[in-house]
Length: 195
Image (cartoon, rainbow, N blue to C red; front, side):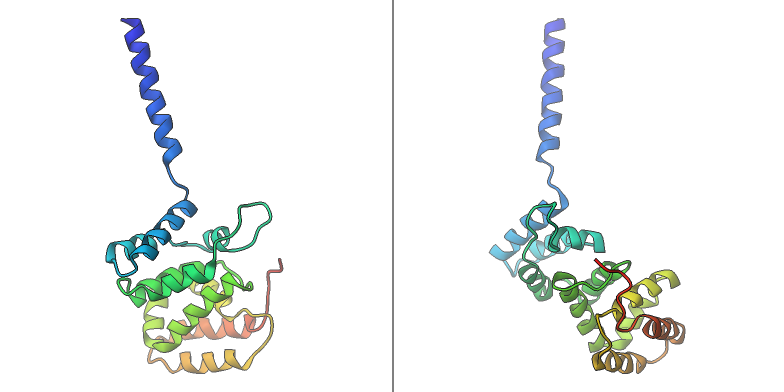
């Protein structure tokens, strides 16, 4: 009887161990969802799975797409971002919410980071009212962190002033615009974090 119980216990523990080893890391989930969506780009379920696996924070974005000599090779951010951009079963608002969360506590950095931030800027400038409807849902601290990241760049450019003019034309949202303006004055063309 003891032998049978011991065998069952060992079999059960090896099954649990095997299941734990088969769990995918967030990066592996993203790679898998990407491959499945590439194979069937118009499949709504594959688009939703890819969106769910996409990085949600600046740290996750860095882990997947930014070079780091201490980790495996980074993913091809241009291909992933292109697929993210083209998803038609994920709304613009959902994409903006995800990009917003990537930018909170983020900072300007070339390549993958910059391209994600540029997509957010593009979507925001298409419809400033939609932008402020999204921003107004966030508390003041998150708004400040977002706008800090939004205005950061290696230098002051005319594009920043044009973006400000476009965003200020949105109707309403005066409190949110004050936060945006303060961040613009403090962080435009400034890189407070240096790699």
